[in-house]
Length: 130
Image 1 (cartoon, rainbow, N blue to C red):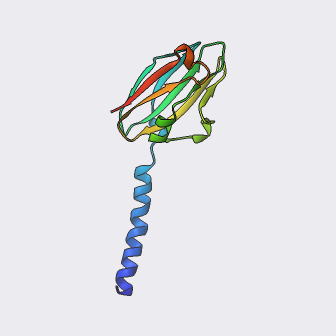
Image 2: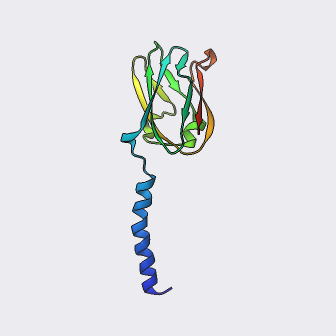
Image 3: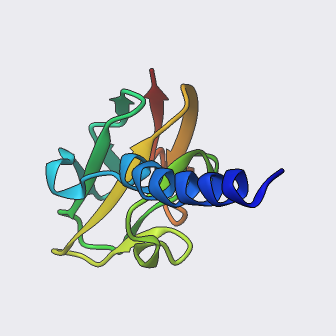
């Protein structure tokens, strides 16, 4: 490889790298909002459906009297999270408050979610990514 061709390869890599990064970074300001109410011992809705390649804002509203969590470890590992700090390791929402989970669904699949404290009482749901 000549110095000239090596320099051309480096320049090409430098110009292409920012394009790949920009294309991969979701525009979180355009995320589609899906609201999930956390009512004592149930999620409403409890069946969620998303499309791969679309950024989403999962907006949790706790209308119950207890703390509730959104626990979905397999789902969390299958998507790109916009703000990982919201996970501790779940999305925990105190009574009367809200929290948002921004994510990009990248691969189709089916996942379970539950409230870690109330799954025994039926506070569970499913997620489908198509």
